[in-house]
Image 1 (tube, rainbow, N blue to C red):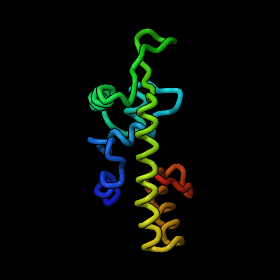
Image 2: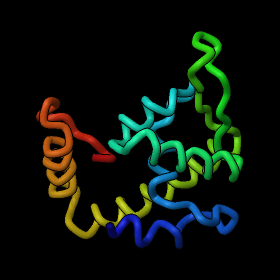
Image 3: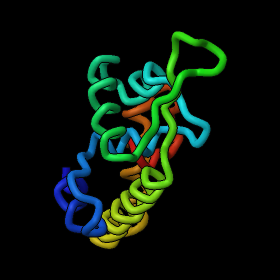
Length: 133
């Protein structure tokens, strides 16, 4: 929550209206693109909610939604150059907040926190450290 509160003030002024949900979607969207259903599953939201999120992101110019060349019924979501820029700015802003948090509690405690959070978020990958758990 703290990252979410501090994030808007750390983003470039031209990245307006970025909600955490859109930032997460840009973050999990592979470079080669993905189907909306894959993104919904990866972010643990409904396909309908993902469709609404993607429509807003497409309007902002952060993604494109195109027919899947291998399946005419499906669509593929890809980041645009602007989406790549917003993703990179978001990652820098998050890293800035995380660096401050790590400095507050110390590197060892921060690493332990990330490890435990990763285990809780992904029980099947116990012991794996996840930055974005």
